[in-house]
Image (cartoon, rainbow, N blue to C red; front, side, top):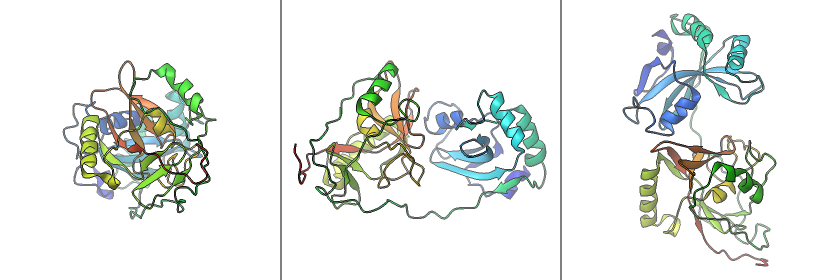
Length: 322
């Protein structure tokens, strides 16, 4: 297929178009492993088209996707009116900030104008980006110098199951931001750097956080990684754990930063959605999505996710009243 001769593919990428792949199915396939029988190994990568409607106008992209790999191969300069009709026919609005799959009409246009020709003027290959050192923001104050003077707030750290109906009241109770359920929410952090580039402490909650986190894997593998990390004594401690819903939401910022995540700059963007320790009732797992700024749940027997671990510690605070 000539389209792939114009693009640089990895050795693990199947050189064909997955026409039935959608953004939602891609998430389930590669971020919630085990939900698709034909994913034979975690190195496999596939290609599919999708419409990105997050900007001023919709754009059509060719995506290369794997378990630990997300890369836009090219932009396709399709007629805007065709992309708009595709969005409307799927029940979306032109103002909808979402991703959409291609419909039959757009698929036929792509096949005749982009996929089958030896050369297509509509295909704009993406430039390979040089991976730069991630910007972790301005230097944080030392513990006791954040301006927090207490008393502290202890967030629930229990693993009790939470139903869908309990989420909205929970968000409102703590004034946590969620882009769909509580867009007016805003939690204030008082973050300090205890001198270790590996961790950050929030003086208001007395929670210590990883600046980065753990890579994408199943919940079973994640628990094994946490156990190993505690045995090794990450950052000098042995009691790291998954955060509860409330703890994980306390890091959520109402506005996405320059790295595209709803987090303070001192946290890495490489963990865009994370496990929580809170199970969903009657079934499933609760996740926090810092890229979309919301809480969601995933069903399935072995959903995959990243992790940003935390631990509780009483920090001495200069000027604290509690």
